[in-house]
Length: 475
Image 1: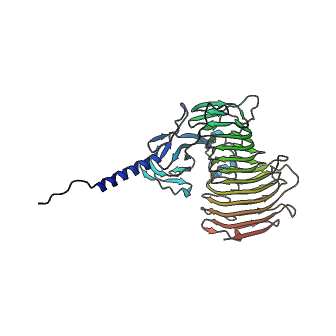
Image 2: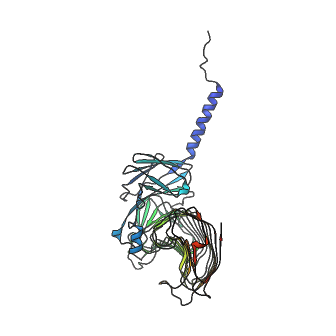
């Protein structure tokens, strides 16, 4: 009679042990860091979020509640025409399972940008998906695009500043109040996760920014929130930059009363992984003015005025070598990526690239050179821009407007729209090119691989006047 050998071979034990070690190692590499919300901070009743086993606080940001048609007719909202959207963030190394629980049954869900490729699994009021890299995501449930959940997956922070360092201005977890603070050369402002810094209105200088970064070698960073909601309309910016070798990274800027993050007369500035919400008229996201070697990367903007806009004021120096890349943009009212309207000193070498426009609820042209004054503008490129909603697409324009301060008009030489793909069909013309007169004209506008609603751009899709020359269209 034969008996069965019940001993497990050593080779099998080794394989099982190795597999367990691999699984444990893989799990160890998946790091999620969540910062608790400060006590008393209002949180979303619409969404609850978990990353792996960690509860992630879901904050609120005020946004416009008007329809796109109402915005076009009424302009900037008053506070009674606003509501709140939700946002949450956590640091990630590796990958994480994210679970979102909603306050109603999920019948449909959309995760933006489309390029994320995420298709959540839905069960009742819960949706789940896995993230494996940092980046901003927007989750829309049951077609409600106003009350979205914005999920910011951040890279794990490294080299966190020492709060005891005399050159560090440290805001730890909790609620803080600042009226206006000037950060000088060599200093670092750190706003920790779980910290909210409120800018207070009033004081002797009510129009000073909450944080002014003024000087050389300055950093403002962290995972916390800087909030301008207590400041009266048209008073304080949240962060203003005037200097050189300045780095702004990781923070969320919420509800500015004016331009949210203006950069003026500066050199070698990097803005990275910054998230901006604004609902007030003039709450532009980033205004890059009279500056050189500026890079904006990996950021998210949802504001009621221009998102990222370049300007030059008279006598403040040229603007050149500016790159805006890998950003996710939600256009609420004006332009998404633009130059203008105030162009009074030369602008050259501007690149907008690898960006996703996930919504356009505005009344202006989405991608635009909008020239209302006298400066020469040269070498502007819009490249690899993916657009999931658009109303009016591309514009290069010289003329007089309410913003004009100079009697002389400028000219524009060399604008390229390349690898532009708009998913949603819109009415032609897709591009509007307007020069002012024979001496103030638009020259050399190039369209290459522009796709609108799965159709290539044709000459009939481009409207131009007599003061435009050198237009080319390539597949």
